[in-house]
Length: 237
Image (cartoon, rainbow, N blue to C red; front, side, top):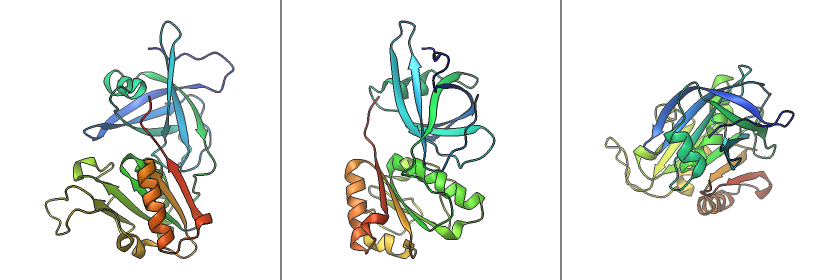
């Protein structure tokens, strides 16, 4: 597939400069944008592929990297069975390739490192939250953010070498690291309670089931409903 878009539309070219594995089924693609645009932590880009016969397929991917002025973004992509775009990115794209992208998009699920935030992610839902955690750490405002992540096993944890820190906790639902004395289990109010900051906005991202479950936990802890922002995703493309 090629990725040439018509002139004058909002699409632009992004050159892949690095590809690294995050889990057995997820890779991060670092790209340099032809037309850098200011963005916020939590926003996403659409990647579009165009076949020689004109057929197109597109998929939205959250940006995992913190906002910066370098014109670079990182998109972490999970390979999905039958997924046109994810299968192509994982199986065909190499460093130096050009992709067609549009963004940044979204103003609801964003954080600017100025007010307290509680980040709650399930599985690949950690991606936009990672941009927020990285922004907090890079700007010296780790005091403003707390993160809870729920994954099945240690092998399923994105950014495994970067997540650990005083701001974060991880709940493993199926298997825990060998060094852990904690049994596997679902994320609970007990996990979230120490992370709640006064006047924080909660950002919840994951599958519809996880998003509803995590939102219920937050409401049970007294988090105001108008300070819970939710982004749900499903397996498409």
